[in-house]
Every structure is written in C-alpha cells, then in structure tokens.
Image (tube, rainbow, N blue to C red):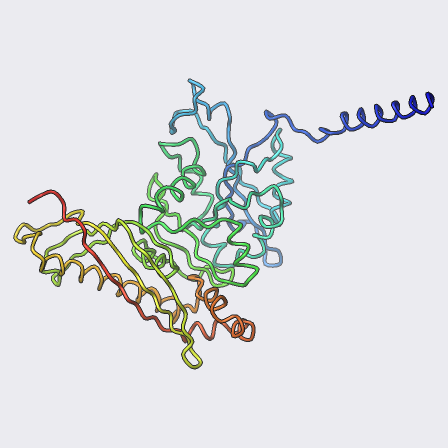
Length: 389
C-alpha cells in the first residue's frame, strides 16, 4: 500500500509539472504584440486580369507614443506619431497577415481592433470574398465596427485627429457617441450583425466616411445590394433611413423656404417612437410606419411671429410632420424602385409577422420588396419654444 501511494504521488506531481510547464507555451509578451487598431481594404494596384489582389492597410498602435510624455495617454495630434500605417498587397487577408509578420518584429494582435473600412472601389466590386476572414477568425471581435469610405480606405488612416491618438479610435467614438445625438450619423454596424445579414442574405447599409481636407466626416451611408455597393445616401437621407429601419433617434430638422410662413427654423427632436408593421395586401406588402415625435424650437430666424400663439405652434408641427413624411417617402422609393435594396430589414419583419409566407417566398423576396408601398402616420408635438419672448 505504501508503494502504491508513492507511485500515485509521483504520477500526480508529474502531471502537475507537465501542465505547469506547457500551459503558456504560446504566450507572447505584451511588448512583442503589434496591436492593430484599424484595417482598410482597397483593390491592389498590381492586380492582373487573371488574379485579383487586395491592398490591406493596417493601423498599428505605438504604445510609447500613445501614452504621451506624461504617460497618461491624453489628447492627440502631437508631434510624435502615435500609430504606424503599413499597406500590404496580397491575394487575400491571410497572406497579407503573413507578409505583415515578415515585416514587423512583433506579432499581430487584434484584441484592440476598432474598425474595418472598405474602400469605395473595392466595395463596388464586392466585399464578399474578403469579409469571410473577419467572420471566421476567432481573434476578431464580433463587436468590431465596419464602415465604407468615399475614396480609398488607406487615405482614411492618414488623417490624424486632434482629439484622440488614433484614426481608428476617432471613428469608433464618432459612431458610438454622435449616432445617438445626430440624425445624420448611421447606426454602427459590427461584424456580429453583419454576419447575420450575410447568412440570411439580407442587404446592409454601412456608415460612410468622407475625407475633407485634414478631417474625417461620418455623414451618410453606403447602400449595399448583396455584397456590392450600389449607391450613397446623404446625411439628411440617413435621418429617414433610421426611421424606416425602426430606429428612434435624436437630432435636428431644418425647415426653410418660401412655404415656411413661420420663417426658417430648426426643430430639435428630444424624443420619438417608431413602430413598423408589414401588412400583406393580396400579393403585395404595405409597410405601415407609425411615428410619435416630440421636440423644441432650437433656432428661429424670424421676429414677426408670436411664438406663444397656438396657430404658430400648430403650423410648426405640421411643417415638421410634412418634411418627415416627404423625406421618408423619397428614401423609401429610392431603395425600392431604383435599387431594390432592403437595407431597412423589412424582410425580417415580414419573416416575424408572416413566417409561413416567408418560408415559401424568401428566395423571391426582392421581387416582393420591389412591389412594396409605404404608409406613414406621423404625430409631431412641439413641447418648448425657448426662453426668448
């Protein structure tokens, strides 16, 4: 019995030592990691007719410069570059990563990846063959944001914002913070949501990035049919896109022109509710949208009206209502008639309300969507007119 206990003790110690020695065999010291903050994809300049290649731009953090002279990591736009941009041409993203590892004395790390930007030219050709890497690789966080740029994605990462240390963080912050407060900034799209869309063969809209001199602007959206970019929406059209998507949002609506007898004014939305319901009418669908909007007068360019007059208030409410209906109808017709692109996920609502119909006709949904009409019911309430009398 004593001998058996000795054998048992020896075996246990051996197993513990083995696990202890091999548990961290693939560990990489933190200073040996190349933390990738952003990735941009463009067509390769050296692509031939027989072989398509992609240019992958990596934005990599420089930790020492990120911390700054005080070691606090505050602000941005200093003299010392806080990121390193490397562009690599390859057949696919895995080969680009292999080349990156042959270029750097560090190991690529995607733990802090903030955003992936698809360039305009690549997006028009199709992003499907390149997006599989981001869906499949377990190192890529599903919450990583996705956007599309007007022009080259590589140019986006050359812009150094003044308020943060990296372009990637700047874009991520804009989407997180200003989307809640601006009707012109589209809801963030991440790889988790995008993967579900691609699996279900749903269309998507991605936030668009525009380079203006030395600044980046996130206004508008890129509309995709399948995996191809087909058109752009302006910032004002994104307002309608959000509501057609069923997303409540805050922001401002500008009312101007000769028809505005109240004078030009800005209506600030403080609260709104949106409900979208599909109704099957014979062999076609009606998209019934109901909206409740509350807001204040943020600015008015007229001194001849009594803003406390009930007639003035009703006129303001009616003008805002008519603009919402008109702008939503224009965007809806653009998606349905011109591009047959269901990036507002109306098909998902049909699937929820009419599951049997969806199972029978999901492969022909584009034909049904092209025959869909919009009916809107909008109620606008002006709650506050300001403190000036």
